[in-house]
Image (cartoon, rainbow, N blue to C red; front, side, top):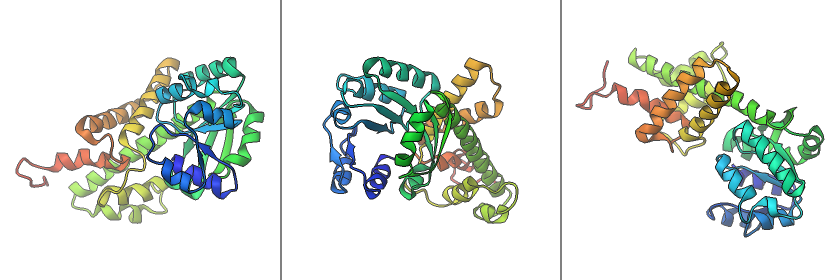
Length: 287
């Protein structure tokens, strides 16, 4: 996600300084015009506004509060966190950063994947001070088509968990539908065409039927990333007593896929659970 976001910022005319946990993408974005920093602290010393897009809460904690973290920086005023992490940890991090150097935390997870970042069509759901969100929105529109302020700190993360609940359960339902069609001898690759315009139609249907019925391409969002978010959904639901039987069952499918070695694959490869079930020991398919 970070590379296309940086490219969009550069194309919009912004001066961009970057740091990354792994050096791989840095050559590409340095060539595009970004200035590379040696540590998060250096980044926060150069920039009043810093945006993060990291895998999980542990990574965010390390980058912000580690020995050379952003919390030790002198210039940092606004931290925009595009990572998807649990709301409770977002609130903890926000309070801790404010005590460390007075900077404001805006939790601003995104939806739309790497394609949305490249096209500038991400949806951003934000939590934190409304004035901070309003000030940040013109910058965020370099890679987003919509920024919605959802309430105080943590509300952006709760909204992202609602998003992930809908996405993960829908992807699982599409995989089951493809398995049902194939077992009945129906051409599953035409499901998105056949259902277009009906109540089952959606962006996910149009994207994931081809991904599940053709040779897999590069991962856009991995099964383990989805599982991480489903675990956060389950934890929040448990803490506040929300009954979520569909999400709970879906989580077990993603966990099974991860246990079968599919965690690093694109979320579309949830279909492999059903493909493997169709194979007999002799390699023939069940009918």
